Length: 302
Image (tube, one colour):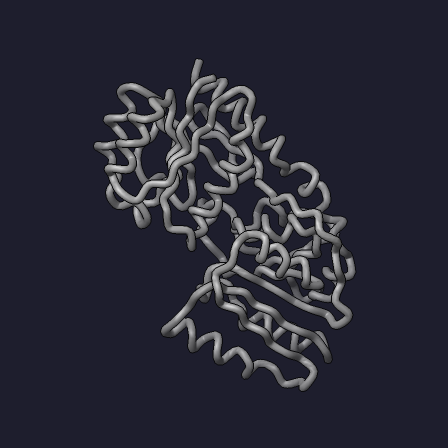
C-alpha cells in the first residue's frame, strides 16, 4: 500500500490537535492506503519522519501558531517529490497542492475536498438526570457565551443544574467564570464548573450525563471551519442546542430546529430529543470517513 504521512503537532490541549488525532484514529485502518500518524515538535522531527516513512503524500494538520518552525519554503521543498495536503481550519495558511475541509457544507473544486465529521464510538447506557441538567464544554473563550446560557437557564427553569467543563483557564477568563453566579437568582439552580483537562472518554461521559448540551457561540467568519465540539455531543446521542453562528452551519437546518431563539427554548429542544440529529449520527462514522479519504487519494495519487 502507498504510504501517506499524517503530521500533527504535539500540543494536546488544542482543538486543531484533537481534530487531527480523531480523523487519524478513524482512517488508520484503511485497507487501501497506509496512513501513518506522527506528532512533531520541531523541524528535526518533521524531517526525521519524512525520511523514515518516505511517503507519497503528506497531510499537514498545520496551524502557524502551533508549528512555527514550518513555512512555505519547507512545504515547497516537499512538493518537489510528493503531494502535500493541508487540513483546513481557519485559513489557507500556506500554499499546498490540495486542501481537506472538515466542513460538510463546503463546495469542492479540483484542489479542495470535503469530508464528513468524525464521531466517537460510545456505547455506554444513556442516563437521563432527574433534575434538568444543561451542559457545555470546550476551550475557554468569551465567544462561547456561557453567561447567556446561565441567564437562559435561570429564565426557563425553577430547578436545574448547569455544568461547564472548560479546560484550564486563568486571568480575565478566570474572573469571567467566577462571575457567572451573578446571573442566577433562583435557589434551586446550581452551577458546576470543571476546568481540568481530561481525556476523550471523560468528556463523553460528562456530555452523556447532561439532559441537553448547549453551544451558544458568537457569530463568526463564515469562511472558518465548523465547530468540533459538536462532534463529541453528537456521539453520546443527547439533545443539542446551538446558536445561529456559522460554526454550526453543518447541523443548523434540522427539523425540529435546534437553533436557540425566543420561540425555541432549551426546554423545547430538550423535549424534542435526539431524533432531529439522528441522520448525522448514522452518517458520520469511522467507516464512511475512511471511504471519503480513500476517494480523495484515489484522485490525488493518479
